[in-house]
Length: 212
Ligand code: NYM
Image 1 (cartoon, rainbow, N blue to C red):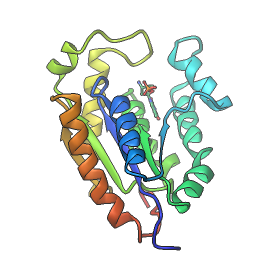
Image 2: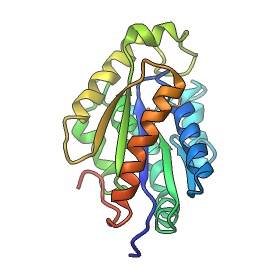
Image 3: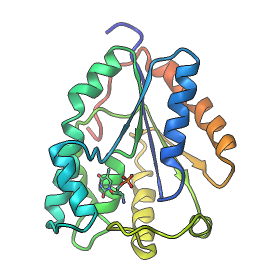
Image 4: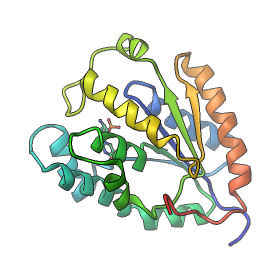
């Protein structure tokens, strides 16, 4: 592979940590520096699978827990050819949620183990960096009420946060925890600087396989 592939950078974190805002700002900043960068987000609600997921999240349909988990995973796999193509073309991909949200949310449900939940995502393109935007429950609460989508309640979010902490103990993934309790601009500066360091090192490495 030519020594200039793009980096796969994922932002994860509890709800209201600012992932979407920060993904957009990072893509914009990279583009302004003349870099090729694009944003992806999961779930991608535009595909047929994404529409099934959307209807589940909006509580318009009910799906069995394993079934919806597999749909979230399939929604990532259907983007893999595009992800690989873009990275190989030298485009940096900034991703709003990935398999880690998949495992953290599903395994927070009764009877769903972390190991079982990881399996369908084993072998996905491995992120070069996963930035976990950490926000205390108190600060999260200050940022407004939950919406009406499925999973948007404090007890469930606490269980999700605990699963994220468990996933972060796996050193095969390049996690960096960032304190999200500060201004949008300060957070952006730190995310930009950590991402740039990763872009330099990722450029000459092959794309890895997640959890393999
Ligand atoms: N979610 C997201 C999952 O349960 N599994 C997944 O694999 C992913 C990617 O979907 N509450 C949950 C987390 C969120 C919800 O995400 C929708 P967003 O970023 O609000 O569109």
